[in-house]
Image (cartoon, rainbow, N blue to C red; front, side, top):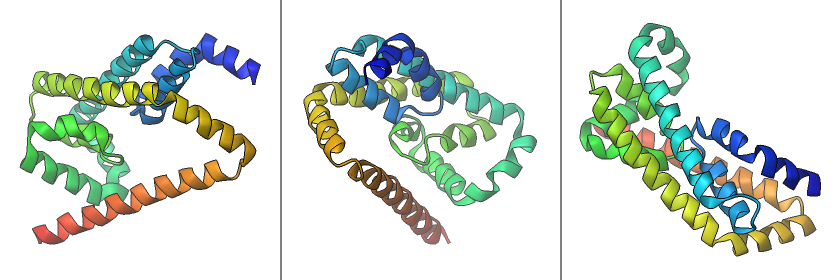
Length: 191
């Protein structure tokens, strides 16, 4: 365990940056909890996730903006989520660019959908930064202040190691089913 903590102290920010290019929810929560225990610095962690999150979404935006034809075949499986993202963009406008960071399953697709449109790149960058700032502020500070709770859960998980994988599968599976349900419901209403 001591070697793991030494590796986190040495390479934690680099790993956090790479992970956060694609979203970073688990990374910012873990970094906040580790900061509460003194293994990382919460301010550096929040800054790293913020920068990586903005860069990741900007990259998705520009890749989809300039490579529409090449990307479309990879998105065939996600037609419903793409349709939902497009509807949310039309209905909510700029607000969805901020809120999408908090919606699992859409936070990767919304920048792609926006890139397909003629949405202004500077405007996207501004709302992307606002959304990323709120994202890291909420989850970074929340996990930092809930560090004691995470410590108790880690101690409990070490006593009962089978509970953590079951809880993660349940949470991720439930989120996926819930998003799928709402996506189908929105598409049915449109028809």
